[in-house]
Length: 251
Ligand code: NAD
Image 1: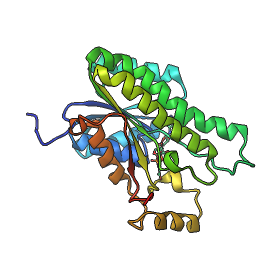
Image 2: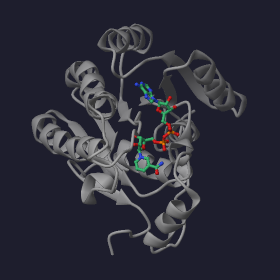
Image 3: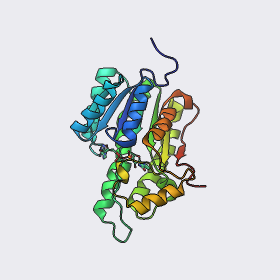
Image 4: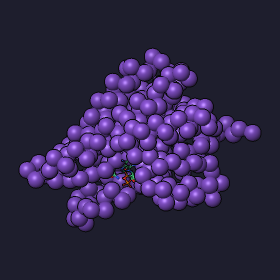
């Protein structure tokens, strides 16, 4: 029996970078909302552990090893999902990395690596999934931008370029795909307590907390709620936005 209170009942939801951090919290939230969470990440053991946690808690999840920079690996996963489930309802482009340095010190390798994952990875996954959504005449795509994609950030030339780029692609795809029934949006988290902040010194972290008017870092579950809203029909008239969830950092 379907439970009408569940916002993603029986939806097939692909989440990249879902073994950790915001992606994993999103997979947990989606399974709590009735979805089949498709956990895609780079490491088999981490993928298996994430799936097990969700299944042990009574949810539905499947895991796939996928590198968003590798179009062949994406095509394989999409083909497997279509063969098994016949559709992909939601794509969450969450995988992302940082390789920070000031402009004067940033290497070409640092720049290219971040662009490959955070920007081209979003393009790769979206381009692989969209033909199937077009056939179905519906779908929701939500991609990870950042407050850094709205305001820039010291030491993050590469990351800022990708996160501004995600918003640009989101607005473009919202125009191209909206008329075909597919909504495309982005999320701009502030600073959220995950492994991605592991290399940031304590005093800088403190500064980040101060910049939010809630005077604290965000929690992955708080971002998962935003993804659930934008993925579900609750946001059915929202298309092409970059939703900031940062405790009011810009105020
Ligand atoms: P995280 O490091 O905890 O998790 C990122 C996940 O992405 C990891 O599981 C990692 O294995 C995976 N990943 C990395 N490269 C990949 C690739 N090539 N293919 C597939 N998977 C890959 O990070 P997080 O903090 O949860 O961040 C998730 C997203 O949110 C990222 O796009 C990040 O830029 C964005 N974001 C995070 C914050 C924050 O403060 N944590 C703020 C703004 C935006």
